[in-house]
Image 1 (spheres, rainbow, N blue to C red):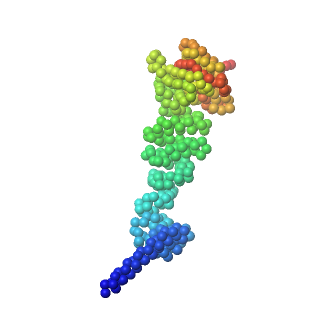
Image 2 (cartoon, rainbow, N blue to C red):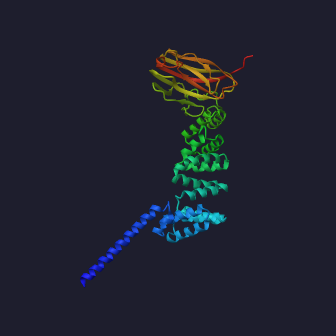
Image 3 (cartoon, helix red, strand yellow):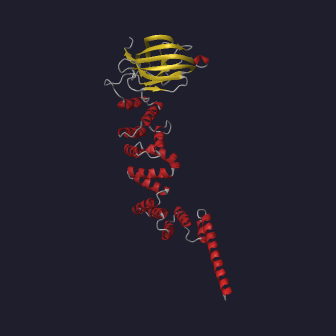
Length: 409
């Protein structure tokens, strides 16, 4: 009797193991075919959630909203919190023309499946079409956080939308929260080919007005305008926030280095040049300071000190004070004013060379009416290339001014 009982137990265990094994095989087959052949997957496992979802999406794509709804309902009976099933129901309702019900269901889908891209994309389009830009950007933010690869398509769309002032303000408000996609959008706005100056101006100005623009972002914005040839707009935006020590902006800004160079807009810029040490230091005369350059005997095309200018056509005089100690180069160093256009170089100072105490340097400048929308003031080494570009010694400069001269008769 005991032996018979043992056989019965062994048989029961074997059946249980066989049943468990069959379930494992069924689950594996269902997972294998869930996406590619959901009908086949459901033969192995009739209530497989992934297969049901894939089949519902396939029915919906084929235009059979009723079948999609039935399958999604079947899925929710098994998994009541399945957010993507609510998205299928929402899409079916939209297909039937019930937009209000579709919106309610999409919102449920977003809560229960916050990473579902299709849901976020639908909600973003819905709110954009109705002009509810803050809500649209909530959805776009969520979409870009879960699918950053979509940025290549989303960023250009945001640039186009930002031509609308209301959308630009809403976008700036979103960017103030420093989302992970902020840098990409600002770069897209500034891009010389795919950007848009109107959109960039509206977004950047809105950010700046609310203190949401960093010094580096501000500088990059102005530089992008200059690179696109928008010199007038760049100057106007810079002038609105530039410090005015005597209540006005001189033709050449911060000529005595009283303010620390901002490296932006139409203020001084200090570029790093191998073989040149550049510092702005006290002069011993009030608040005025001097630019001190040390050249280490290496080949340098320029000193790395420059400023963008916005001069109207006409005659000017460039003034500065300089002194040097053992400054040696083949042709000396010169201050050039060069047009950002076909007019080229419109002024060259005398060569600075050797050792000398403080002295005035004057240079006449003639800005032509054409081919010169903006200018660059730079300290350059006029030697084209080669060993002759070596520069050694020290140079101090301050007291930069530009004066407008009367036109010749």
